Amino acid sequence: MNLRLAWLRWSGRRPAVRAWALMSPGAAWLLLFFLLPLLFMFGSSLMPARLYGGVDLGFTVEHYKQFFEPVYLWILWRTVLYSLACTALCLLMGFPVAYVITRAGSWKNLLVFLVVLPFWTSFIVRTFAIMFLMRDTGVINTVLLATGLIDEPLALMPSGLAVMVGLVSGFLPFMVLPIYSSLEKLDPSLLEAAEVLGARPVARFTKIILPLSMPGIVAGSLLVFIPALGSYVTADLLGGGKSDMMGNLVQRQFTTAGNWPFGSASSFVMMAMVLCAVFVYLQQRDRAQAMGA
Amino acid sequence: MSVPVVEFRNVNKTFGAHQAARNISFSIDNGEFFSILGPSGCGKTTTLRLLAGFEEPDADGGEVRINGEVVNQRRPYERKLAMVFQNYALFPHLSVAKNVAFGLERQKVPPAEIRERVKAALDMVQLDPTTFGSRAPAALSGGQRQRVALARALVLRPTLLLLDEPLGALDLKLRKEMQFELKSLNRRLGITFVYVTHDQEEALTMSDRIAVMDNARVAQLGTPPEIYEQPRTAFVARFIGESNFLDGATAGLGTGGVTYALRPERLDLAAPETPAPGKTQLPATVKAVVYRGEMLHVRVVLDDGTELVAASRNEGQLRSPVPWKEGARCLAAFSTADLRRLEAEPA
Image 1: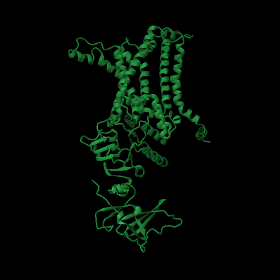
Image 2: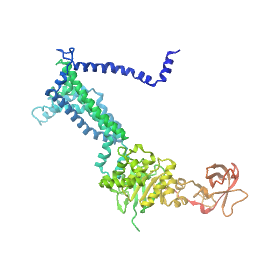
Image 3: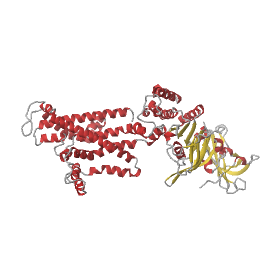
Image 4: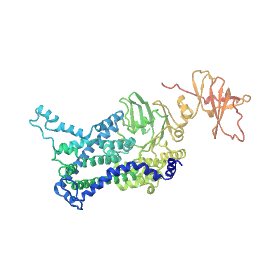
């Protein structure tokens, strides 16, 4: 009997088998190149460090303890602070943009296109572009010097400010798009109904627009906050070692410092934080779905 | 004479090059059930939106008055009216009770009073507050959503309630039921209803007066019998009920070029050998007999080619069938008093 036919007949009665068969290439890929390395990293975070990189056999939690030394907590604090600030700025600037796009009529598609446009260039190239703008001999300082407004270049970068500029410009589209798609679904007649019921503009915003766009706000905030936590290039190029974030710490442990276990442990602390953020998101989403929104 | 609740004085509204309302004038009395009837795109929704305050008349585009005051520039929340929307427009993130309470909360009514009034409003539309109060709108049927939308409007105790095709999404049986309920709420509460619909039967059934709209104008304004029995234009005659159209020459009135409307139930058929006395009789040929249940429609063609429909009560085709077979000769008989002379329609 034809083998192919036999398989189809047998699996056709077992939907679960089919589902696994369809998933297996992707699942195998993730298993091999994501889960396995992750397990290695988790293992090595609990092993003693070998000098100049690598690990020795054994078990220790010293690297997790080490992470709670003030110098590293300070980096963690800065990472969280920068990421929160970046998320807040993206939200404050992104929401009005998304709102205007939903009401832009025939301009809508062009505006969405413009929001996505930066993705056509790599993140690193965009970060370098900001360097060209903000460094001592960059565009801003050159113009200000030429017009005589300043006598010597402003120390715009490397600095925390420059890192923040880099983060916000890199992640702003991730905030705009989900909020836009939430607002797009908002039926305009709801706002008219609210208006007839006596809601002035502020009440319409706080009672109707804001709650109904909350799924987009939360999704956008996570899409900004999580990559911001893990960002490395921005702080490296624009912070110049003075505004290190977690990504820079991890990178240095695996390269110059050669302390793999500590790098791994730092990564896992960060991952735990990301998982917390995702957990908050899922909870919020479930509540929204339970409400039938 | 008291001040009309609503008054439109030569109201015009233009969107770009499109004129959505032309010289609209009417006034609505306190407690009246007033319908704005017309096909889609006739300007009825624009008229309602002008009244609600979502649209403003053109500059020098006439006056919209509520209780005698010009409200052209006023926002909807300053007009003290209530509205039920076509798709109900319930807030999906709020429970039924919160939806109904929305307007009261905006007015800063004390919470205890809000609870009382929400309960009373849900009772009024026959939704049990304890069962439905905490539900999300998504968990309701179309008819229940309609009732919540109505309760949300009535809870504010408005003197003027606007309804934009509120029953359009309901099935026939539920629609009839709601028609009856809306009408009785109108009578019981003394609220003025302004009701937009494209359903002529609905308008005839419920309204005290109807404004029939066509091409951004009010084509005719009157009570249901006036609209049905004395249509002013061919459009009104055709849109409300069915109508036959006869040229003055054909009808034997000697007024060629003038069109007359004749309702199908006002046209009788007689056998050629037994003409009906005192009526105009025109020889015709039967084209088809259409069985409609309670009515029987017989299509005939006059000798000059004019097609007419005669409607009669179905007396039981199994027991005593009508004698009209396709191709049979007959007389189309009507009294000239039932002819309605139509005005030419404005361009």
